[in-house]
Length: 208
Figure (cartoon, one colour):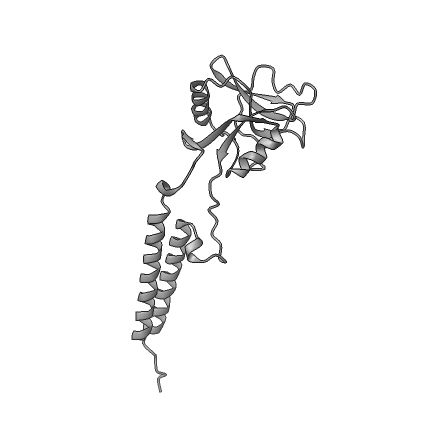
């Protein structure tokens, strides 16, 4: 029994050291967001050197670890609007979303869900000549959305793709996200305590 307890304590100690090391090496400050910059609560990158159609723009954003930008709140919209105004970008910019599958129903290409926040240019979306892809542009001092022909070439607004937070049973401890490591530590601790309790219960002798 004493040996069993020692093994459990050694296991927990080892896991704690690994988790501590992982945390110190993989904190937020260690993440390399380049070329994305933080605007509000998200990270964005505007490629102002290469104009692409909507499909190429989506492909490009994925190639650098992101997706076409998809804002979900007024706060995110205003943060991006302020940045675009400061950079004096007056051309159209490709954005996440299209109604290629169903006319008038704009879906996010990155999430597969309906676009939840919109701020349309007046009288848009208009679908003039079969416009199916979403772009944004500064009008006056306001960032507004518009539907446009997917084949046209504009700059792309990419949004950093947050890492997948799901824990995998198949991955080793060193390849898990921090919250997954802590989850595993809790499981190991609970199992050790349960086993200890079950072995420490007095053995009942049958009464004669």
